[in-house]
Length: 144
Image 1 (spheres, rainbow, N blue to C red):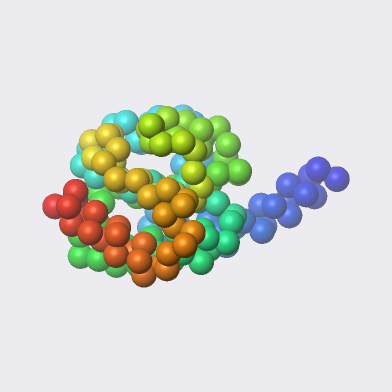
Image 2: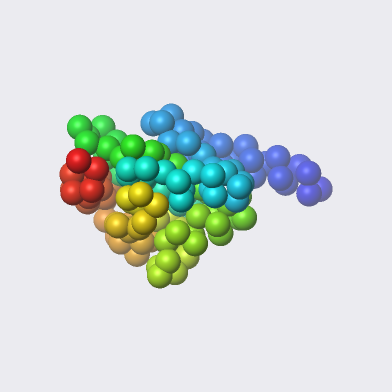
């Protein structure tokens, strides 16, 4: 029973992963991958905490994809999937303190330090265009 449920969940969330990987965002699937990439990333990093919720589908992922069409974008693009790779997500969230866990959410780090953070409550009641506008403004501020 568990194996078929796990397979079902994997099949169900794959399109949610693809929304981000198709625009060039690399998935960090283990805590080791997070440790290898986030603290040592020079320049700017976009980190998306992905999730299965409706606001991730309707606002977060489309907003991120639209923002990445901007002339100025972060040097590194990563994502972890809350509720799927729990350990990797927990490790990534260590870099988002003092913010409490929030998914979906979007972080911009500069040389490994958090400089901009969009929490779930700032995603769920806004449009993808609004989120893209906030991100592109942050890209212009931190990524030049």
